[in-house]
Image (cartoon, rainbow over all chains, first blue to last red; front, side, top):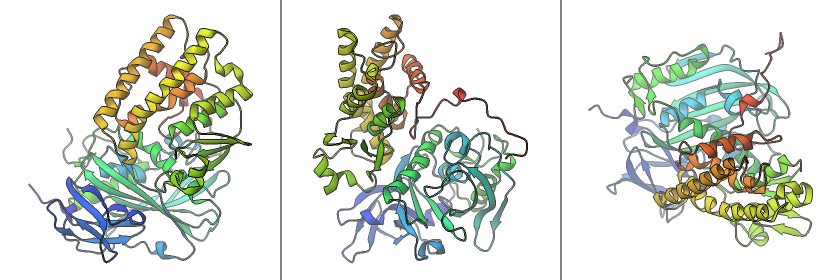
Length: 281
Length: 219
């Protein structure tokens, strides 16, 4: 059996704001782990056999790894910009492949049908051409110049607007979305999906946001994002096959799926296959 | 009327749905139930010592039980939803309102466990949820034999609104509705009601909206 190359990656394992000395027991790729605040105030994560695991706190969450991370956690420079509201959306568990959760986040075409009257509406179902690339220097998947008509793109949006998006996949189970920011047209709102792989078919999803929005109460911002994600949850739990197919044998992608195609290609190239189906069945 | 509301709570949704169906506008006050646990904070504990939501405030009236809120909304604005035109029907409505608490305690708890990581014995919760669903299925089949599409009558009542959300969301807790054809028909009937609103996990019936038309030059 080949080594799981995702072992050395960083994964979210809890909210930094809920870290306490008592801690919580969770799991990472099948291994039970314990996450708590150590006596020095830092996050302390231990593996199933009691060994200390790497740990850091970033973007509202505690991050850890079962292996030996070769790189620090990916950067989100916008997260440190002054004036942004940082929103802990909280965990939602989904019985699906962690890779499926990310792939769904990258998809635009489902907006009018699943997020009706919020992120999309019929008859505005067309996904216009956009650009996708695997950036070799950063080793990340990027989709840019994505445009979509949205009835209520954000809590701060009034009425329908054509929203512009950029999607970024800096790690196999994490995606960062940059989106038109209605109150600050020169800036991008940052909406992330951090996925904790519990098993190949089970994950804890930790959405997180860094927004320019001084008006909307925090509970509204949380409700908005939870609404969107939980609308996806029942769809994700019913996808067949359960694991993300990396063999092109079963599916015929369309132009709108370019980001997904690049994401799958990038996963395959790196052997990021925890939660993937390698051969069509 | 002010509703302390959590968008993912089926009990809060009962109140939002009832209000939408009878054309009442609520003043929604979002509560950070998850992850913030605001419902257990001092402000809301002072209003409702049970530490639960929804809470409905109207003047000096404060209600903390969703069934009472349904009764209040219907009695105030749309009394036909009370289903109390005969003694038997009034009793049936009460029977299902009380029954709805079993759905909350079983299917609702299974959903919280599976989705928001709340503690619970998932096998027991699912077993209790399935038992409640079977009882509801049998009740709906009997109603069909009587020629009635809804739980207590041939028209919807507060009993339907009290039971619908936790039943429709049963799959969120890993309990399938596939073996319950009468429940699925009833769910369609509820979702077909004029003024129906959805919540995350309960999708609208897209086939009920007119076929979309794209004008030339519009995209």
